[in-house]
Each structure stands twice: as structure tokens, then as C-alpha cells.
Length: 115
Image (cartoon, rainbow, N blue to C red; front, side, top):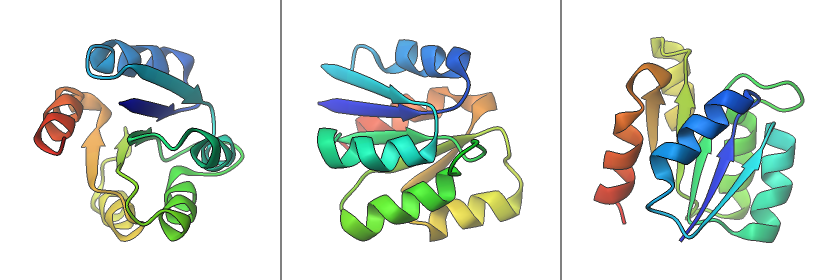
């Protein structure tokens, strides 16, 4: 299986890679939503872990763009901005789940449950 990690923070991408390393044969990374949309077209990952706040294109917009073209895309929004509005926007954008960066263990649980 393939994973795409999208986050503008190098340390967070590394942390997510460490959490998911054993579940995926291939893990790729992007630093913004714009790169993620392009990478999805090429890589067709099985899962995407998407941050919300990024420089060029935010994760909500990137998720919407990916889901329009690939309705079956499995995207989990992973963000430190875990207030009600961000969670609602994440789900409305087409994300399967919203995970707070304070509880990253949920990422593994969600992926294993939805294999």
C-alpha cells in the first residue's frame, strides 16, 4: 500500500512516517496542498494524511480537489486546529476522518480499521 503525507512541517512529516512506516510499502511526502493534488494524480496513494494550514494551498481545498477527481480517495485530515469549525470543514471537504495532532495514535487505528 502507498501513503502520501502532506504537511508543511518537516518534523511532523517525519513523525507521521514513523507511525505509519510498518503499514505501507511506499510513503511519499508533500509540503503543501498544491503539491498533494499533483502527487495524487501521479502516485494514486491508498491513503493521504493531510494537514490543514499550509502555504500555497490549504488541506481543505486540496482534499476537495482530490475528492472531485477521485471520489474514492481515503484522506484523513491531521491538524492541530481541532476546533469545531475545522472538524466540520474537514468532513464536508470529503475527508474520512479528522485527527488532532495531539492524538496521532488514532491515525493507525483508522487505517487498520478501514483497510
